[in-house]
Image 1 (cartoon, one colour):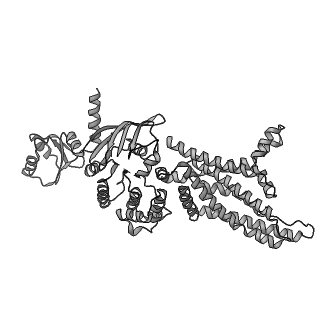
Image 2 (image 1 turned 180 degrees about the vertical axis):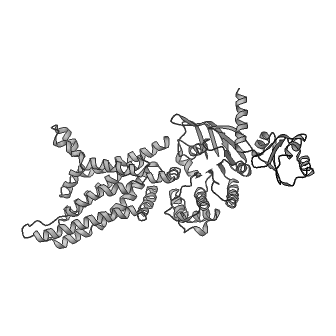
Image 3 (image 1 turned 90 degrees about the horizontal axis):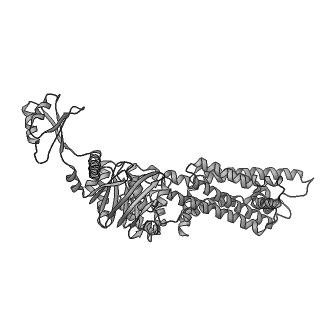
Length: 309
Length: 248
């Protein structure tokens, strides 16, 4: 369980996060979504007992992060953004060192279990300096899971992984998230959608939205974007498409594709496809584009600004 | 206590994988070895004129001078490197107290230095064979206590500097500067200052003076208490610096 109340952190005169209040329950995977520099790492560092907040309080696994920092640290598994590893150690030595620091009973068994969980058992005797980025990330995750923590905090855990590793990683997190509290940060919208029960969107140190991924999506998506690519030049196709009822903001993109929007209530896609074929074009591509994170922020921050005024 | 030992053990092992530790060990053993051979050679040839046999100071004296440079090289990375690799964040989010981290780091380095010192024990054994009626055991003991205490102080100052700076070279030169003050510079004012009470304080703080008297076989309680307090102060400042890092 994580409960943060009014967390604020100043670095000198710069305010990194301001008045963050949120909760994450047991068995819940909560996503922290925001651009770089939004304050995700700072918040996570406060929750793991690495640094105290300037104002506000937070309880993690039932303990206060300032006055009961050691108790919090016993119960939290943390994977920082730059995976902290000792290249001079083997994978096994590293995990054993961490297990000893955490005074784990049967530390050998716990290390083996963590290695199995991230599928690194075969590389246990390899030196960390010889591991690929993806494998290092897995060792970092094994370190965070080693002591079977009540709360797992992962800072941008999938950066640098290849697509197959990302899928694997997500499965592991989903599995772990069934019985523990997981807080993970990401700036990839689709990742938050796939993994999280709830998403907190943070921008410039403030929470700008908090909801389930589905609700956020439907709240935000006012219009659907579609990209269309035909063989050859699409210049002459533009006026034809633009004329169709319900098509909005049709324009040619520099890469030769044609992009337009429509309201979900009136799906114009069949009409557009028909018109393209009838005009004698070979249709190569026709696909929706999701809102980018930037667009979401823009929309949310504009919403907030409007509400405030 | 267990955490201190866990960290110290890792640190100790790490030294055996870093070239700088081997260079420091080599430098110490080479200097002491050459010095030893030269002095022995010289005294055997001059024995006709002089009847004082060389003492343990010919081994421990040069060791102290080498440590002045070797210790900053060994301690510069203790905490600065953890900061650079991002592993300090890891250690500071495990249930380990800041003090335990710092003492563990220092202890690891101390054990490594003790290993180097232990190797030099071969010289008193050789010296004992060469001289008649052998070397003074009491002086040898007091000499080795002196070098061990001095190493503890040097390392604690190095640990503190490593926790103050993120940059290893800054940590190296800062350590060297502080060591030079305590080793050489602190007694210089006593040559010009006429005030006895100030001179007494400076003489009390002078590590070199105490070291030399212990090397000669005279040891007072303050010769033991002062280096231990200075070590404790260095480690306390390191722990405070780590704590301050959290609040920044």
